[in-house]
Image (cartoon, rainbow, N blue to C red):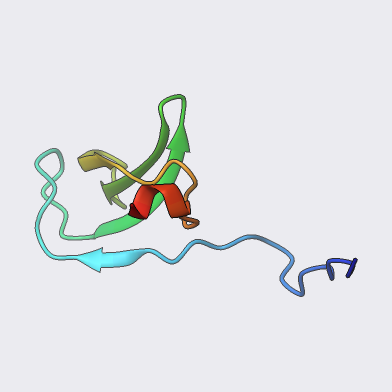
Length: 73
């Protein structure tokens, strides 16, 4: 069995995708979309980076970025 190599990055970084629109709370135009995990599992959220208001939240894959073969059947 091959050993897993230690990551070169010191911290885990999730890519945040810029989304067009404005925040209904603070009217900022700095919206980003990225995956988060909470008590309900994985979610793909669109959040205001100014006030952290959740503009949109939809259920994402339960395994995060990995997908099970059974989900594709």
